[in-house]
Length: 77
Image (cartoon, rainbow, N blue to C red; front, side, top):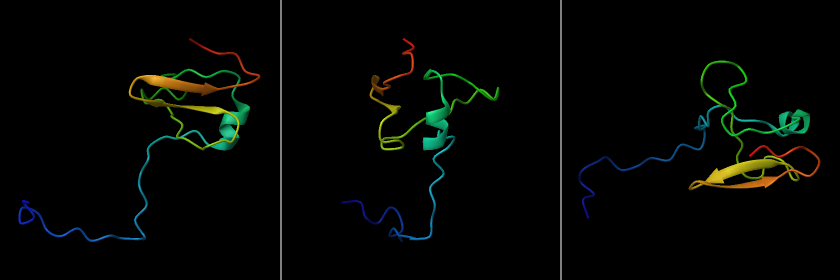
């Protein structure tokens, strides 16, 4: 293996990943509808959800497919 190409990786337990703009569980409960690419603050970057953000609502996307779990909010296709 080419283990000489880079320095050995050193793990830092204090490092916090920047996941970008995420919708929180509280934000999801306030939503009236969901749109994957909706730009709510006008900066051209939509918020996103990640799996397990909310136990009942929310969406996440992998490889072009989507899973929507929304019981009492309208679906936007």
